[in-house]
Length: 471
Image (cartoon, rainbow, N blue to C red):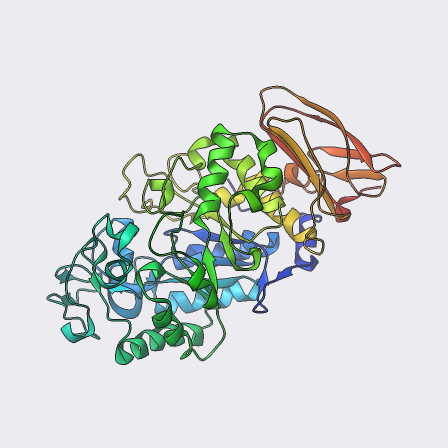
């Protein structure tokens, strides 16, 4: 499959309006290119992410880590040097520059709660052990104790001061430790990094994170990984004072609705699910942990669910709640420890995006189209003209800027619905073939009164917007 080129209509993403969160950061849609190399990410920014309008990329931890092929080796730091399985510092800097040139920011997955378990050698051959690392010594760590399952329910102190799966827990309330972590983050922003996912934030006191953030030279976007599905000693609420927070309830509950529930129930999901404020929420259908049955797992919808997964992403992206992150995965064949494929994503002008390798979900027409729809309708965050059949066919408008319909049933959806749009013929953003140009797929005619006759096949969706009127 050759590299995709930019169609005329999709190019409008470059001038589309965007949301701005409470801290002034542009928010639209970002993608997690899990385990991708820095050269692959740079090329993806130039050939797809920038032209299509993705706002940013979450990259895997760039720090020097333990040796090994498993994906989680990236989450066991040995030093804060920029040298990882994804590439070296020169490649990292080149990626940032090339992505920025396309209007795409880089968010780093920052592992600052702990250092590597046990003893051994780093990917660069450096030795570590007995809580001795090139930048830390035993005095920089909490006294050893293991987090027990019951601690999550009734002992917040142990969750934040004991060791997560044997990883040596940094004493993050130590002034010297805070300074070293802040220095690492400042080094990254100095290279052009625009934001951070703070890994395992739940395992650090809110005050410790705040003390580190106060030392940052720039104002990067901050989002903290806090797994809070209710019923635990630590909740996400206190962390909202530090920045955005991962909303795991959204992932679990959205998956449940699309797999087992009724889409009609989504009409009031923000209130019903007890979610955090939209401007603070990082949302996702799945992430690299819960798609493997790890942190915050449940019966999560993933790429393995094929079209059902695409439809769940259409809803996430079309509905104006939170800052959505699209997951871009790889096939791990039941081995939840497996690292990424041994072949690059971009190879001699072709893409290794296929069932047995890199999944590239962010490139799927329904998902990429819904991402663009979110950009085009961002100026009007209201939901109006909600319609459902009481079961698994739904539709709604984004004020007077866009209309979306989703059919998760095994029968065709027949309905005359209000779009909120001016009369005319519109291109369906979700069926654009970016290799052939705009509107090779479906087009939809809106009547003089703003209504449209929807005849939507099973397991399909459509989305039209004010910039897609053809005539």
